[in-house]
Image (cartoon, rainbow, N blue to C red):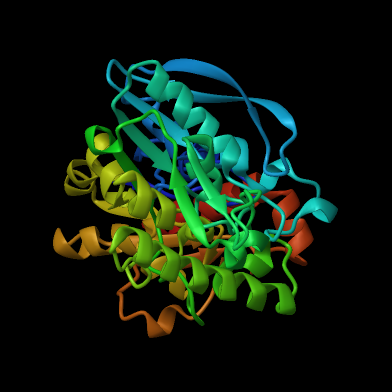
Length: 369
């Protein structure tokens, strides 16, 4: 039997390749004749470049930049002959901040903009920006600031490019030396949220980044105001574009000011890694992520893998740290397994995921024999 393992990372716990390895060991323990193909996946968020490294000849570039609070750090991106591959989380990620420092009112994507600027100054005309894991809700004004844009208040005074200043922006001034109409910026997105409103960037994600309820409302108000400013300055209506709420609405400035395109992150990674061919050659497909819930079926790895399996009539099982509400998702599952159902509590599940995945793999192999 040919079993394909194509999970996403278990966020905060294990990378996708380590998830694959733990499952592979368990599956093969008592069934060495099983053929296991590991194909770790991502959907355009943090960890995507790690997946692509096996399929591209990347050169690593190290850059002096700043973290979400403006402190100097070193960060890496990767390049091919004509393109740069940059993860927003490497300079603007939540993982760079201690818990008490997390608040998207005060954080910025400017460090990511410095990395993009470095790539453009090296003559790279194509940028792939992977936007998962952000600590920010600044609608991308930090990136735009690093690339030559100024954001002014009602008194024509420059504003620091942070989420808390979005509602103060009155004028956008372009002082950039780059001609963005000649640059191909691709923003890889893994969600479908609009820019603002009850399903927008602030209400959906800012709480996870440290914002209180009152601060979430302030951020949403700022996003709405900035959308109006962008419309006035650029004649574009971008607030309701699907995916504009991803990563603190970072795409707003990228699309509105820098001529960027939002593209489906999963489709890009799947195409680059030839996932569909691997599914066609499998007898059983196993996917998963840290937490499977309704959002898993809105552009993320699990939902997309299930769609491909249905298209090619392949059975698909799901393994996750935690599984919620699958009965409502209208997909047929070959099986579903969660770590939390085997652990005493979430703390134990997060502390020993490899052991639990190994045990799950052994149990699956026994059922297949």
